[in-house]
Image (tube, rainbow, N blue to C red):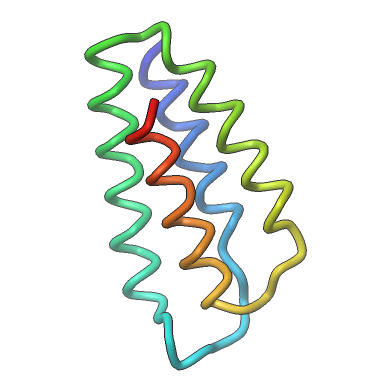
Length: 89
């Protein structure tokens, strides 16, 4: 169950990525941020599995906020917001 939750959260994070190029954020940066998100989710869910649903809800809200963004800068901001939400849970 935990692995499915982490996998789902990771896929949701990937869905936040934009497609066009911007000088302030690179694809490599996004990949690094995605790894940080996955590690943070695993850490939180391992310590307290009951927080998983709250994390999913926060990530869905952030995904809706950034939906349709095509700038990598916006994608980096979305990843930063997701990471802050996870660490704040």
